Image 1 (cartoon, rainbow, N blue to C red):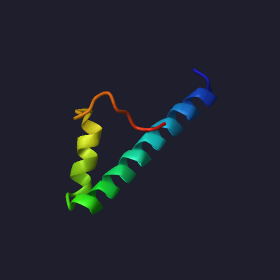
Image 2: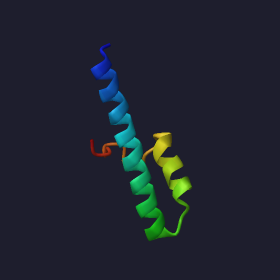
Image 3: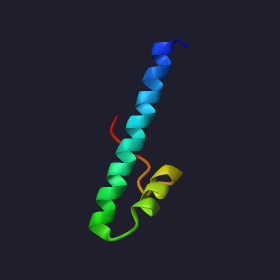
Length: 56
């Protein structure tokens, strides 16, 4: 695997983490639930609607 490919994979993973955190934080504001709990649920992979995915 090339260095560039490794950097790309790392950036994609960071982007996914940033999206999860942003979604969790926004949802927490709207629902009053803890953002940590929402982020944990997002990370778990257990989804209410499995056909929907996070944006890339």
